[in-house]
Image: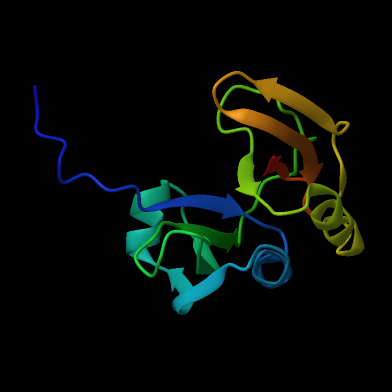
Length: 153
């Protein structure tokens, strides 16, 4: 068995159609913080990494809230060859949503909507034995990516 003690979660990539708007959304609504400079990469390395001739990418890393200055990031990128956007789905195999613990689900839900996001499902409250009461809802960011908002009571 290998030694996993030095492994650290680094980031999740979010491919956006309007990466600047998505950076603004996640910074303003969820308190993410830009890390490093804007990325503008193209050429042989990006082509080798993606396997796509002529591929280029622009975007920004955002530090997620609640984990300190060395915490994981969301890498918000726009490729010069983005594919068509698929409909939102919580049941499609693969990564399905990001989750943020918030102090007030309803207030955060309204803030997401003010930015052009929308509800995906309905608000639910679940009693979880030994953990507490959880109020939760799935919403979509302005580009349709699913976000779970959760509030513990």
